[in-house]
Amino acid sequence: MSPALRARATAWLSQALSFGREGAPPLVYAGLDLRDRPDHPDRRFDLTVRQGTTVAVVGDEASGVGDLGAYALGLRQPISGRVEVFGAPVGAMQYYDLLLFRRRIGYHPLGDGLLQNLALRDNVALPLRFASDHRLAEVDGRVGELMDSFRLRSVATLRPAQANEEDRRRAALARAVALDPDLVVLEAPFDGLTGRAAQDILEKVSRRDDGSRRAVFVTAQDLVPSVRRLVDRVVKVVDGAAVEEAP
Amino acid sequence: MTAVVAAIGRSGARRLSVLGGLARFVIRTAVAAGRLTRAGRWVTVRVLINQIRFTALQAIGLVTFLAAILSFLVISQTVRQLGRVGATDLIGTVIVVAVIRELGPLLTALIVVSRSGTAIAAEMATNRVLGEVTALEAMGIDPYIYLVLPRMLGATASVAALMIVFDAVALASGYFGAALSGMAFQRYVNIVLTTMSAKDVWLTLAKGVVFGGAVALFPSYHGLAVKAGPTEIPQAVTRGVVATIVAIFVSSAVFVVVAAG
Image (cartoon, rainbow over all chains, first blue to last red; front, side):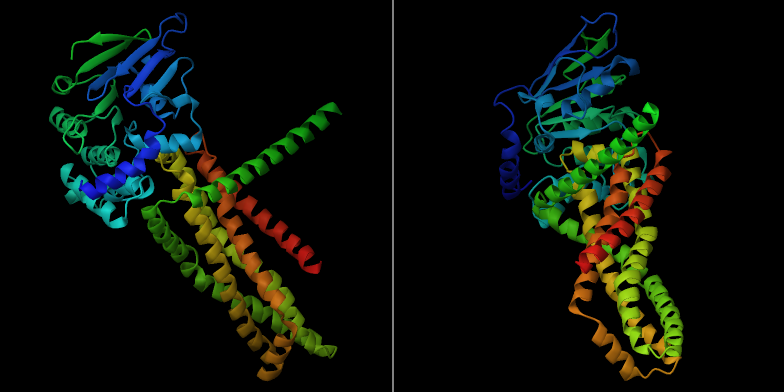
């Protein structure tokens, strides 16, 4: 990203930054009821994702792992407990504030969340066009960088339904990091991918444009060993509570 | 008796709730217009141009054909009947009031509803079912900016433009209908120009804006209201189109009252 483009992005994001607290951890779950064991309501989920770390939470489908990403984005509210992103209580924000705030967070929803009537390239360009104040030429330049970085150049004009699963996943992840966010939330990002592809994608996603590490939060049913090696912490949801596992 | 009153109350409450939802929908779309980003403005213009291409340009043939046939039939029959009582001068009132002011806007709006209203409702409902609306919100993009605003603007501009096309073709074709009964071109032009006023032009344009807005509003609203799954998509399309047709006829009646006042 060029210095001018970075300056523009920073200015634009300063509004979104104003919602958070300086120095606060990127993501905190405190006292969440994941409804795994309603007969044991005292089992609560607590987790803090620190700046520059990659944390994965695994658990089966009924464990409530699948809801954690939506809680972080404020797309869904937990039954009890609180979620803080950069120190801001997500559940208390109004709709338009949330929209602005989400520009600090890259998100890869379950599946891929790509818009079916847009080419992969236009999907990647979406947040730059509608959630940033870049000029069109700057958007095109940034999209070009992302297409090269995520090896999407040859399939840029394909619609999601025409592309294979790996390319769709790469496009969705390129879109998630398009605004160079401080935190990326990935829901089951490696399902259906080879270990090597998953490793390649995670390495790309965990680096910011200036080379520093960003906070990455991954939810999945399980992780392959090659991906586990790249993760700082693996937490398993057992009976609604977080249990540390060896990465 | 209580059950009857309760049923009426429930139905009334449901309708009021839909009206409230529609009002919120319009306000959110207006708010969205003020939140467009720099690049978003250009992309919205591009989407708007595409929308006008699908809604207006591709419908011109059908609108022209129907305007020509309708006007020819109405005028040729009316001139013949009025000629029997020596009142052919009233042909101006028929063409301006019946064809230009009432039937033209109604038919144009109905054509656009059948072509584009169905498409808008189906597209919005599909966006909702596939989780694309949530994906937009998760990226910090207001779905009203990306999905609703270009369609509202596109449908409004398209319906207004198509009404002008309809009126122009209807006037031309009306002459051929009148000529069949021996009316001279100059007389036809004089009668039409004498009857037509600036009010007719403004009314047509105002109807274009109102009907065009309705063509995008109701299908968008019902399309985005889908929750459960793909089986709701055809229901949303039906609800959107029926609501649009009702709204067009009701607002047409309101225009008559306003114009008479």
